[in-house]
Image 1 (cartoon, one colour):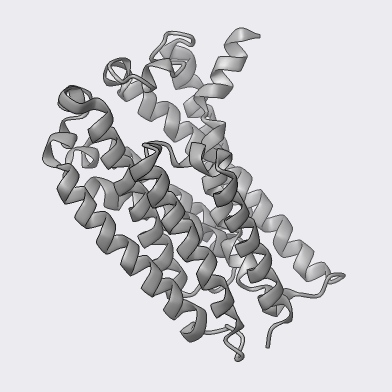
Image 2 (tube, helix red, strand yellow):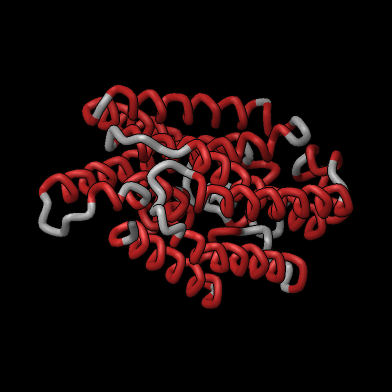
Length: 298
């Protein structure tokens, strides 16, 4: 039982909420789908949920492969040393078997859903393998690859329900993920201090000042891109009611900056999203407002 528990921990369930991005295309097409008793709407929701399950299984397999590759560096990290593989709570052989099983099952299931969706999962897997082996050691490219993984989640969510997705939404997703990645790099750099290079050599290529400038540029770009999206994207209500959601995005970004700079919590986005109540409230209000605007807005 203990081994099973630690294996589940190694799958990083706290990271699974990232895959909720697969519901993005469903959410932003509510103005076309909204008929509460419509079988078509519930069919799309079912497909999005199946896509979420497939992507979650794939990403968990990738996490196991990444932890296998980084066992030694993780043992030098004050937080990552507690991971099941780094702490020796599960064996590398078990982790490798579980990773292979998850990757094969998720790709086979995705192929059963539709080939385009399966292709997006295949591209994500290739991207993550290249990141683990090489790209995580290339300055700036490392955070770009992380952000691209989020974009692929949004694309996969559109493909699984065979729906159109706004280019603006992809840009906002990329910039938002880039913002989180840069905040995480800054936290790691300050947390590890002189030991940063021994854990991850790429951290030696960054400085807090450089990351601060990148975070500032990315924050402003995210706000501008999302604002433009709310009133220029195809399919938005002609009343421009989606602009009502802009304050929630502003608050969310500023709250995250506060937690990063004043509370030193930027190293784990999933922990922040799960535990910070003001941020949770902003996200829930944003989701509710978006759903209402798209379902009934014209």
